Image: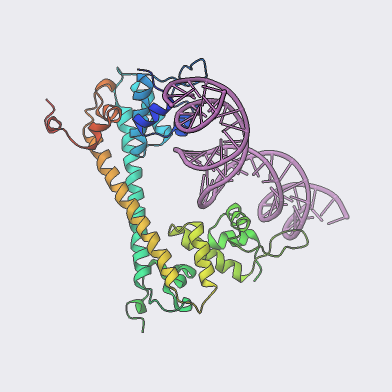
Length: 145
Length: 145
DNA sequence: TCTACGATCTCTAGTCACTAGAGGAGCAAG
DNA sequence: CTTGCTCCTCTAGTGACTAGAGATCGTAGA
């Protein structure tokens, strides 16, 4: 029933310093201590930490998790807010995906045009030096010679 | 020909504190100063900063950019290294995309199962509380009643 | 020439979510 | 009693900036 911080760490996969960090920012409640000043955790701490871990794995910010925990503490209220938080996060994730995909396309383009010659002719470096060249191809691009 | 830090900022779109920051970490060379201690930039600074900005926009780390600048300073050497840096970055980007897409799927799943009832029945919160439930559907999931 | 105002200067500290390390103390087994 | 592991607190570091304080510079108008 009672866990040391090491137990909690093993059971949740959250590192010990991280557990202490969560406590320091108020995300995990302060547990009681032994006579020797060691933290003693119970079932509620374990559950809470699993919740946090799960949400972090899904990329929720600490701020969002704080809000979700608040919500979970009021079981009688409607869960619109939880839905809202999750949707906002999803939108964020989708925006990041779109950005990264654009980036992927540009990088691929850059790499494909590297002729593996000398630095002075390197398309990667020249594209970086001249912003306009990187975004799209000029007419000569498809047929550079 | 000579630019103030403000000019440089406007021309490159890099904020003034960021320019000073780049100087402080050695990414942008220290410019000469006026009698009144103001920085005076020339063409080379402008080019360098444009290069940095472009590379940052493409998500290259400062470390990678430092390496790319090093390379650009040796025009006679083969550009294999530049190619390598770009490819590594591309791999990074692709891995991030894959991670985010997995995350997107999970979030979508979570949100779709929110019945908009009360917090106590909220699938989003219960999924977060019980890690196993979030990853995939148990048999009852498709037909919960 | 004086003055007002914007631009710039340095320096420190804050952001996010941890991570690393120092230096010390508790605790169980041999 | 000692060894070795776990745990304690505290500070500082990560990346790439960003924000703010308080001082100084430079210039345009009165």
